[in-house]
Length: 126
Image (cartoon, rainbow, N blue to C red; front, side, top):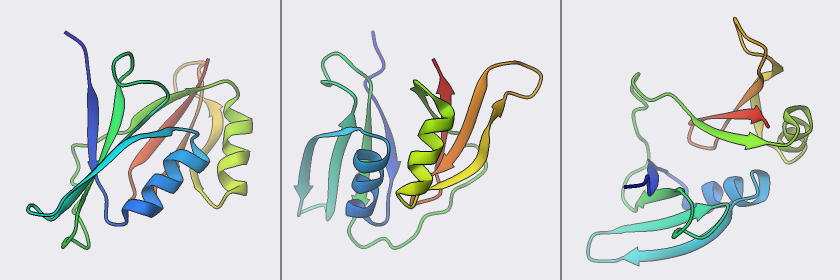
């Protein structure tokens, strides 16, 4: 068994694809429209789906907003340099909501950014 993907519902598919590809350096692996169901799926990641867990973005064509709920946490991404990653995110118009620093009650350096739909992205140093 292996983890295949995590799915997020997004309101503006192109804006979300741009965030994950241009700011977080993921690759758009595949995208498919389902006209009968009125939705599009886009799969993004850092390598081929056969070898990596990826992110599925689902865009329901007639939905303009979603309730975030309070059970969802975040997506964690390992980066070489948390400070540099945050500077890049900010310089490209992204939102860093927790500046880089040590984890509470620990020493791991981390930060948090927010994607266009409000999902939290944890950046962890390697």
